[in-house]
Length: 248
Ligand code: NAP
Image (cartoon, rainbow, N blue to C red; front, side, top):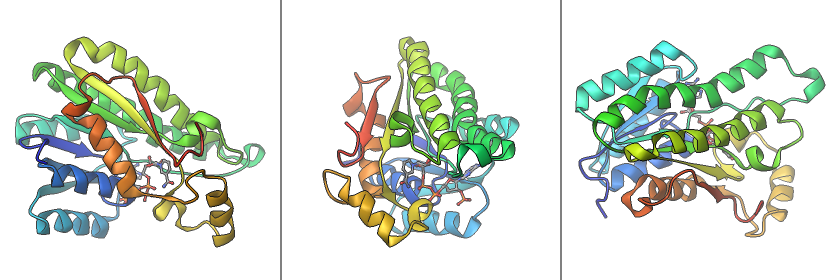
C-alpha cells in the first residue's frame, strides 16, 4: 500500500521508540520522512539508515521541540526543501516522574514545554503552509495517563491531557481548511521510556490490561498512520486509544 506516495511527513522524536516505528510505517507506505531528534545522533542516523535500506527516503534534523524559534525554523526548512509538508506527527516527549510534593518547578516546565508547548508551536508553524497547500494531517501522540491520570506522573499526565484539549481546539480551527488534527493515546508500550521499569511492575501492569500484554511501537504506528491517511478523511478531533483495553 503506497497511500503516502508523494507525501512528506515530519515525525518529531522519530529517531527512537514509537516515533521510529511511525517513521518506518509512513515510509513503508510511500512517504518521504523527516525525523527529528533532540541529541542522540547515533539513533537518528540508524533510523534513517533503516528506512533507506528498506527502500525509503528519509533525513534527520536535530532541534529542541521546546524551542519556539527552532520549531518555526524546522517547519520553514522542510517546506523550503520539499515544497510541501503533508503530515506532522507530534511524537517527541519526555516523562519525568515524581510525587507532587517533591516535584521541581524545572521538571514541570521541561515536561510541559516539551510535550505540550512543543506540539502547540509546531502546529502553529505548520498551519500556514498546510493552509496554502489546502490540506494536511496532524497526529499528536498523547497518552493513556492524559485520560485517566496516574499517581507519580502529575506533570506528564497534565501535559498529555492538555495535548488532547489542544488537539480538539486546533481540529475545530483548521477543519474548514481541510487540515485534520487527531490524537492517539498509547497505553503501556515497550520503548526506552518504559525500559527502566522493573519486571515485577511490568508483570503487574500486564495483568491489568485486558489483552494481557504490553503493546509495541508498531501497534501505535499503525494507528497513527491510519489517522494521518486518507482512510481517515472524515475523522478530526478524535482520540484513538491504543492501550489493549486498559482504559475504555
Ligand atoms: P523515547 O523512546 O524516550 O523517545 C523519545 C523521542 O523523543 C526521541 O527521539 C528523543 O530524541 C525525542 N525527544 C525527546 N525530547 C525532545 C525534545 N525536547 N526535542 C526534540 N525531540 C525530543 O519515547 P517513546 O516511548 O517512544 O515515546 C514517544 C511518545 O509516545 C512520547 O510523546 C511519549 O510520551 C508517548 N507515549 C509513550 C508511551 C510508552 O509506554 N512508551 C505510552 C504513552 C505515550 P533523542 O533520541 O535525541 O533523545
